[in-house]
Image (cartoon, rainbow, N blue to C red; front, side, top):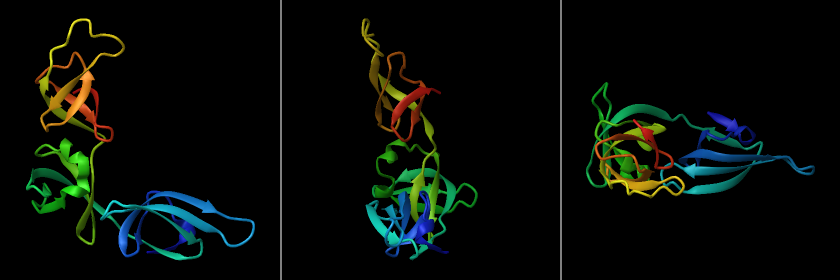
Length: 186
């Protein structure tokens, strides 16, 4: 759908230089002299690169339709992560670079949303919080209570996070997927 650049808003998906991009920031400027313009930041969904660009408010921009499907994680084959649609059993390979560090949060059968454009995966949306099992936690040391006492714990995916000293091996904890931080016991 073709829209005017003055209508670009944060969170929209547009075609920028023939590649899908997410609008991350917009700033509409209307100087006293001259024509109005829209300054926007775009995140290229294929490369992850962030670009700032200025459009005249009367220029045309193509807004694109991004679809998302809930899928479950199966396994990693080294360079790609394999997901399956639980309804149709179709499998999709997503390049690991598209997921980045968040791959450390994936356990088999974890459910995420795969975003696609032209039937190609362009992103993965994780839930806000995810439950993971603690596989290693040091014993609490007596007297280690200055401030909020924390210790490192290792989770089933290999991720190491700081948690309160009362967390023990074998427990399930809730991890924030944005900050990779401990939230609570599950």
